[in-house]
Image (cartoon, rainbow, N blue to C red; front, side):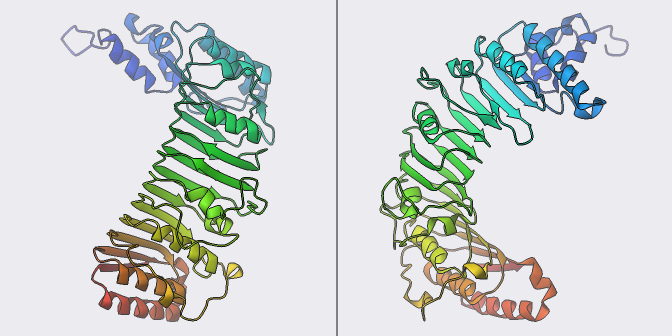
Length: 420
């Protein structure tokens, strides 16, 4: 009520404004707004999205873990079973250790038109097995699961409305994961992180636009993803890639060779090391539409260099190149004499406008690569080079590196910036 006006502005806010406010604050605060006025009383029971996480139910406010679990179970039961409208979006980040309670909540949601579900179970070294009722949620559009066991029931025919699938540290078989992906006929975004029980993975999706993987696979094959535009790939060092099931092609081609619409690519170290086992092609089988590449490279490893050059040669429309240098001499390979002089990069950097290099250590191979880019990038506008942190404590080395970069700067048409 404004001073002297006699008008209660809080009580007469439009209902849609009240519900927008309630959806933007933690659940426990939304419940407390019931005391503001008659119009706000129990209004939280009409919001279509519910979030149970550390903000809405802080663990620090409970004396013991068992006390926290009892209170959280009771609170979730009360919220779900006294809600007045369908819950379209439900997020549960929980330490609750009772599978039967979580099963009960998922069953309730599956019968009430859930569209967006985030389920993150924080159990130490134990996975929560999802109940089969989850896979009957035909209206679900976004699904994020963490620390779960996924076993698809025989009657599962896919989530026809699913557009976003995010799986983190889940246990699922190869057959189930491939079925999950291929049967989601409107899937646009796929995130895989820490996948267990699935040594190989072949992805076929005619609708997939964004793909991110951070996991260990013996074999990864992006067989048919014709409209994929963005990919972030991080394959762990213990990925094998040595016993192919999906043919004897080079791993680099299996992962990157059939992506005609790809515009943005991130290859996180040590992905190149994982992909380079076997012969490295000069070019990928088809020209990409890549305009932005971010890549982690060990410039002392011959095959990593060859793989990176293969990608660059296949990306004639590249505009932005971000490189992060990793120095691992244990992974080094022998360079042939005049290696950089014989590399044909004609046309590879014709569209390049900006290059950024981080963790630059000043090795001969790093310097020669930059020299090659400068010589083959006619419209390059700017090169930013960030020196590796340890160079600060090696003044003699730093002086030598800066001296070499100064020589390149004098030859370059582009602006060359060096920072520590």
